[in-house]
Length: 408
Image 1 (cartoon, rainbow, N blue to C red):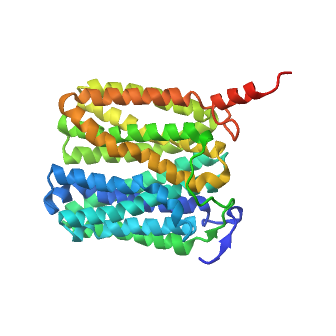
Image 2: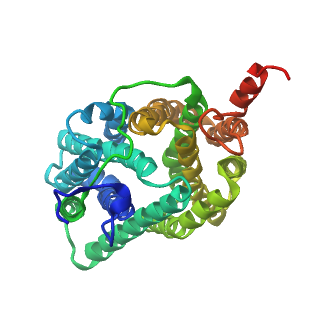
Image 3: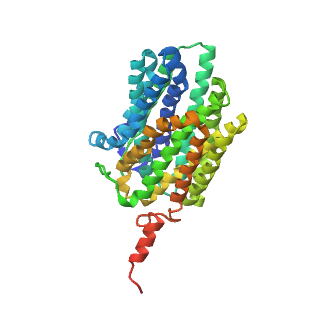
């Protein structure tokens, strides 16, 4: 079997399987992004002399490719999805690798954009391929394994950065080059070492939004909104309110990755046992409690514990993906992945700026509003049927079908 071999999904043998390819690529993507993010603030201040103004611009630039993820569908006219995933992965690695060689504001903006284009396109295609390649009965468990692989790669990246920075006294350009270069090499392994898997169902190559997917779109939007509160404000609170040092924050990130590596596969098993509806209801009830606690917490170790619990809920979002897998036309996976990624990033354009203004006077309000968002998500999750499938996308669609049926 060579890299030019094209085989059916079910014919893969040995270690060169679709699941292992996804695990390899997700781990490679995590290495590049973890390297980039671990050095972000120090490089911005020490290397590129950033102030708050420039870091805000940088973060906005980083989110632009996520907002434009819907354009991935147009790339499928040029490349098949598997090829595009590998190319995106290599681009993410390249953007990371060259970051340290351009220690200016404009240089950091450009390398960040390159990295982010690769990162967001890869995330979009990876979601599509996962839902196409993984059987419905095993998808939650396998998605948990894939998340765990990404967490393991994150742990390895953070640990290597910490050790080499302390012992070898490397500079920014060397570490960025090592992390990004490793991702490029792993992308090459993904290209050479695995066969090309045939599409089980040819994917549509145009943009659309289907009315019957409305609940999935709504859950995706709300998920993106709460994600911004976690990413932007939860970590910021640790530093501003509780005075966490760089070492403490790094330790918290490592603990997050270790916890996620352990819990993600277990969450996948729970989704298989309990179903998507129950898992999402559990997630949003928990999030309401976490956000309310964020608003009033006064103890550092409790705040750190809440941070770990909050991050664990990200793994429960597997249920959102497998819910869509069950209700969707198999030919809709690729275009809908791009649309959903864009919907997920709409909030990224608004929330950091708007909620940043609220934070200046009432920090607790940010988290209480987050609790309100979780309550909206809870209400939406209650509309998921216990047995979702095409034609039974929501409890409302089921009721509508029953109402339309002729009386006996």
